[in-house]
Image 1 (cartoon, rainbow, N blue to C red):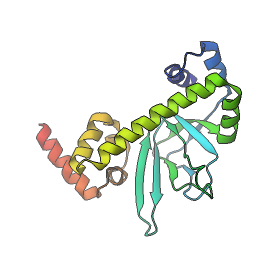
Image 2 (cartoon, rainbow, N blue to C red):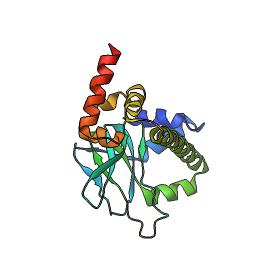
Image 3 (cartoon, rainbow, N blue to C red):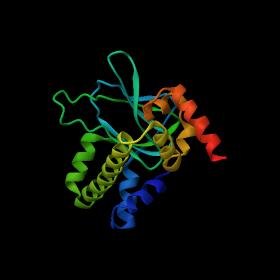
Image 4 (cartoon, rainbow, N blue to C red):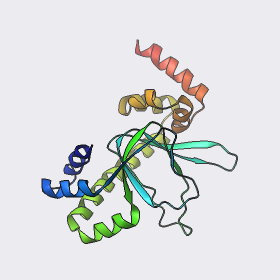
Length: 194
């Protein structure tokens, strides 16, 4: 599993293999069962994650009790709640395992200190974050300007694995529609693909 992390890091740095192996040897890798809540909305986040295997859902619950899925993270994606700008530092989101997961688990305080000690590590992490933020920005811009049917087609093109991995009601919430609307769009898309 550590090889997955090393290969991922190689994409964002020119650090030597032995340095990457040293970083990978120091990280905690933990398995979590499907359904495990990693962070509850309203808690102060103190950990970050990198997914070696599995799927994590980021969601919030509004005042009426309605869940809204914001993102799904899968293999080779990092998951961090950035909220240092908030006065109370609490998270507006929950994180839960949609599947059994194997995760690199980092302590946000320790990670911050390690970055400060190693310029190469800090540069690599910043490159990873820039890539993640750029991708999220593009996805969000596309999402708000497209119809529900287009959102579904985009999902089929860019992340088809989610269709089979994620419960339909969560997928519908992520796409900004009801489960019934998603069923209709899936039926129409299926017939138009034949």
